[in-house]
Image 1 (tube, rainbow, N blue to C red):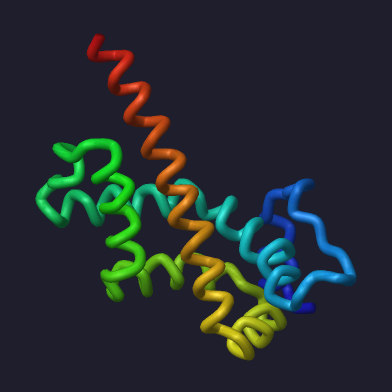
Image 2 (image 1 turned 90 degrees about the horizontal axis):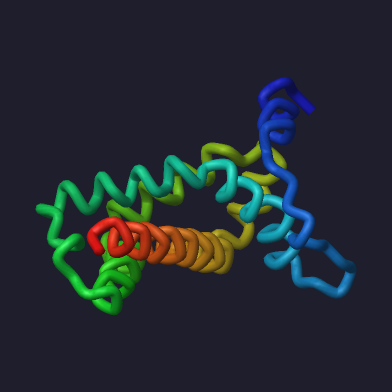
Amino acid sequence: MDTRDTQLLLMRPDIPSARISSNMSAEECFQNKTLRPVIKLQHHLLLAAFKNYVNKHKNVYYGLSVEKKLDYVENAIHKDMKFRNSLKGIIIGQFTLVEFDLYIQNSSALNKRMMNIVKERIKDNLLIFDKISALIES
């Protein structure tokens, strides 16, 4: 393994709940072994990318109800291909060469898993931010 791959693997957080077993599909193993740790590592950058997306779209997001905010996140990730590709790049750029080879063999299914995890992380964090904002205002 070359230096880049070694360094990438050393930087990743450990996720004890992301277990791997012999009865899992190849996609689920990749999700737990690679996607979850990389997405957790890139968490703050992914949130910053979403905040930048909101700002570039005239901050409409901030005036929405909680339900509409969740829909906004969903639409941004699933329908805006430029934004979606940017998020994928943030994650794929952290793959080792072996992981990238595995990824390109089944990129369609892995992209769905990747974007679903990212979408849920963004939604969870934005709900927390909304609750904190509401507490501060009251």
